[in-house]
Image (cartoon, rainbow, N blue to C red; front, side):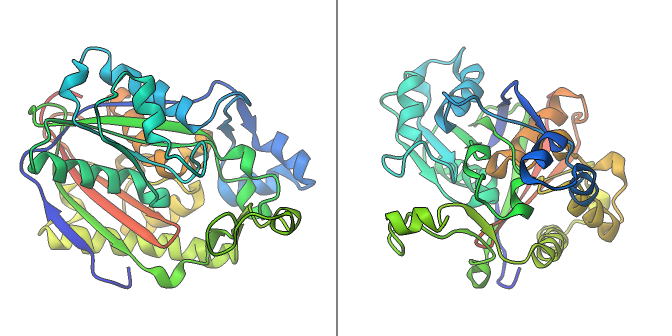
Length: 337
């Protein structure tokens, strides 16, 4: 990160429950390659992504998020939820926000609900917001991240189309000492890289028009894939060093690293640079692709369900996204997950 990382310690915030939802339909890289007119083996070699979940046409981001959050609220009194924070860059509509749609569907009509747009760092940003809300009086906060991006990529630059999948994740952040205790977060941003990965049109800078649609300016664009690859790898390594250093820790103190899932090759290079053994790293993007802001939460939930986190384990979340945004979080399991 070019700018200083904002590190905050927390003493009374826990990821009491986690969840995720992935569409059943899978699109393989070989199938995608046919539509792109390129060699599927080359795409797999470059990215390590074999397939990704794809939402059915009738579903949008809110549907995926609702499915992810239902298990978290099934046994709760709705009146005990004080806030809902949803991270997404693929909302159902430009306006209103998607969080109120989710809130209404879950029967949480009294709850403040809002979206945040921190790209692939959205889950950690939402976690930081939830912990701050608990510190100022909230009892339970639902956080979620969801993306429904595959259908938006038909006119995206080729290096982008192969990366993404659809999915959603959620967590109940509470005072109850169970699950994963949030020790600290570290957030940062470097706006000098804001053009590297972007959707050009549809905002106030370049409103939607017949010309922007005709020119494909609503599709995701990546200027220089090789440069973004290197920047992403550097961001992970620098973020880990800066965050753990601020906490007086090293990777030797960490049982499991759960990174954002941009593609397998970036994570493999990150692991080599950090000298991190494969058994201490969670990789899910080989079969899920990049789920955007949801990817790190889905990867954490998968690790929990696979029994990879035991009481006493410290878990490091690392994420970097368009903007550039970056986020890290240190968790410690206080009970069986």
